[in-house]
Length: 104
Image (tube, rainbow, N blue to C red):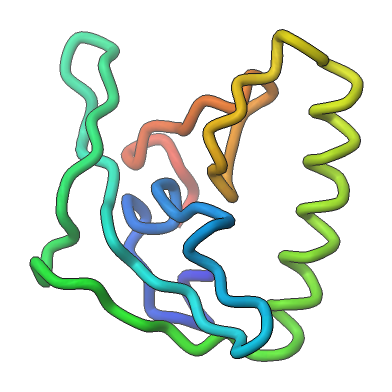
């Protein structure tokens, strides 16, 4: 997502499925994750201070949809332990990650 869309790590980690327009292949960037303080991760406005629309190439959209299917399988396996917060990038508990610890 970084290479194809020019997204920052914090924007990728804060991206949600509800902000992905599958019909038009557009991701709306409405927030980012800030560096955590005392293990608390906060959402904030993106650096540009406005919503951006990122065109998603076909290959990336196919990968995202396949990722979504895997995420749904994991959600079904974890049951109540899965925190349904709509994030595209998630850990096994569906909590988002720390941008500083995410690969570039």
